[in-house]
Length: 253
Image (cartoon, rainbow, N blue to C red; front, top):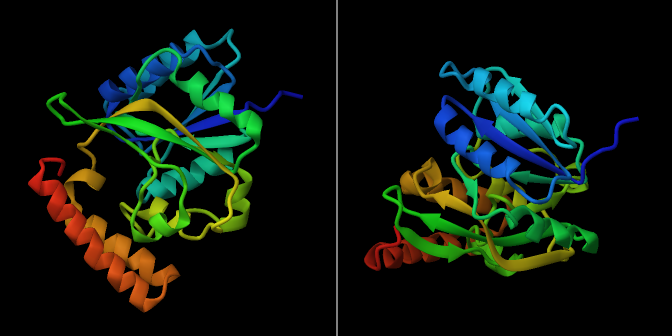
């Protein structure tokens, strides 16, 4: 019987072959190899299939597995749910197709923490502007009180124990941007968590979660109303807009 990997990396793609090439190159260069990568493609037509086939051939004799599933989907959370059904790892990690590991040992640094059998393993990421400027290294450890206000953990690259999805369920695909935040609000406050101060990924702030701010806050408020009291969700709504105004003032948004 084939051994299951320790980590399943789930990547949603759609007509981004050039960016995916960079991500897969950084993944295959990692020193740590106990992983599988599940590519969840939205019926791309830009040569993604040929690119993936080439990488699969390069892994033919190695311990890693690169799985490609291509079919029309209803957004990133629909794709991630498909990936969860395919994943075999003890932990899962969601990474953007346009992200890349910072160095050869990034995955090894965070994967080493799986020996602690935590539910969530968080770290930081290096966030860059589309023109290449480094904006900040960001990402906090799990704190339920802070999570109620807004997403304060760096979701790309963090490791989630797969059994948590059996407890909390799959992502809600009716969300377009903040379905991961809504999912985290379902989790209990007393999770076993570990945080690393290392930055794992280079993340370019060009995706919808960084450019469609109004929709981000609307979906955040929708998730908060679903899981928090009316008073708490309203207070969080006001605080989030104040925080956004401050970030705009200092050039981080």
